[in-house]
Image (cartoon, rainbow, N blue to C red; front, side):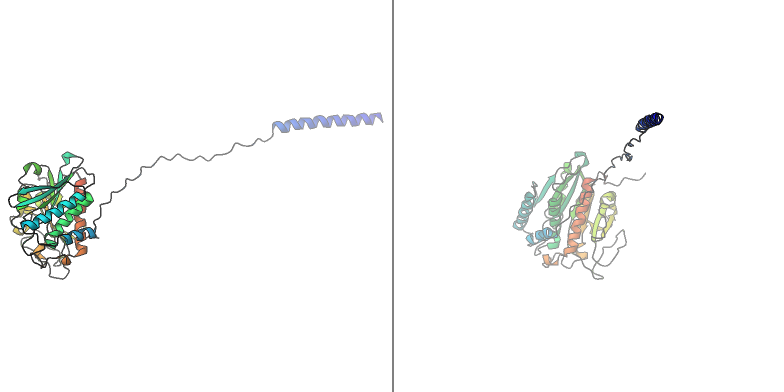
Length: 340
């Protein structure tokens, strides 16, 4: 009996020892939790953000037509032209400009200037004449041009550009370009000019076959006998200035006319205020609906606001604003370089 008791005790001791070793072993080799696996994410370098594209200021048809309505009177006599100058200077002052009256024999020009950020870049002048012939209220000739210059003043007056923006309203164009001829005698001002945009009648369009005529001797073949385009006339020595006027699918077509020999062979292209600048060696373009080559109201009492073609006029103004904006922001040389 004692033998069995001792045998049982021996077995219990062995089991206890083996069990304790198994516990130690299992604790030593127990599976520890694996460290958390973090997905490796490649570091992305910041991508350069595209610069915001500057949008060209958009003209207001209502503003443009309002100017024509306000100027719906003959601007021929001294008193009438004085009233016109008062309207122009008042509108400019409302927009923050400081217009100057520049007198010459038998007339007064209005001039205003907004300085650019780079004096060496020079200036772009936008201009139109404000007088009329007798007995005509001159809605197209040339309240339309005056309205566009005032719209340029509104849209671009506070724009910061390298080039200086100048505005001019010429008097006595109808009596022989007297205002622009007086303007170009200021040689110091001309030295800073890089280009001139002159508007003379930009509000009339016709869409029937045969309503558009052309002067003889044009350097290009006319695209159509319809008067649905805006003509831009420039001297061949300043083609970059002429080429600043671009066609667009949403605006009236632009017909660019590069004129050789300063119009010697095409005298019809010398009938407005751009011509005196040509003969001073300054690049200038005439922007026009082609006047009597298109409209039956040229120099007539019937040249009234109702004859202005709204969509064409608004599009013509936008073309001018687009070109002016590009010229003010560009540093391109605007004179054609002579070939070797």
